[in-house]
Length: 307
Image (cartoon, rainbow, N blue to C red; front, side):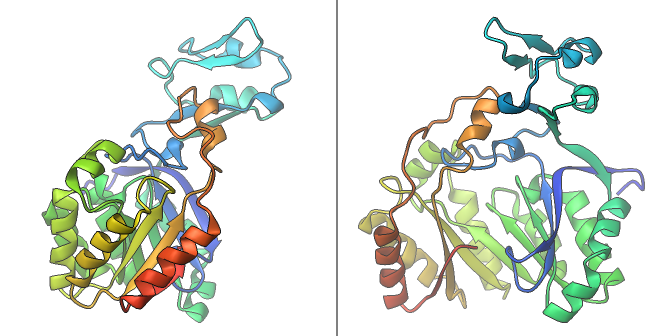
């Protein structure tokens, strides 16, 4: 990896109590090969910086129009702002000029050294809590060299602190194989076991995803399967039973995290000027979540709600 190479991230969050054991630093990669209908972080999908406009913060001063060097920001007749994604360079000048903080830029280039410096702030808490570093997204496997170097250097410099990666598994096996020595825990998404349904729901088939998790389990990796649970889409009994059958075939994979669908990401699509396929869909009903939990627990899995 070139010393000057950077990763495209949209956030680094310290003192996280999710995404692995203990207190963690979570690094969010920008760019994902899937387009899940229920994705609650649309700002993570595209592998380039994006500008988001928040209507309720806008005071109509037009400074954003004046400073944008690419002419990507325009005002509509109703007073709203339009961001031309094809023109926007993600330079952030509009956001810096906005007194109401109505514009936000998601996506910045960060070196391994910069990411490690932010993670080091949590190092003491991570050490005493059994925590560490988690790579999330987006999809970390879409930036494999940066992910590998960040994990390797974190493990060495933090003297063995815990590492985890959240992944859809949609990548070449060689990428996962290279990461194996540096990852303590794989938080692995299983969105649907049927290839046709998976393609309809995410834009891609799941053949490589299923094969990769088989290989991880066979290699002795610690894997937690995470199932995003969406009412009426992948929570029906036959689909859950098929998922349980598949997970049972994975050596030593005994824990499942259920991630019930929620609507918190819905406003982001509007702010990014995109259509949300599940707009208005209610959150997954708690009784249904409990039914799925009880069924999977009855199959011998340790089941946790949330991840």
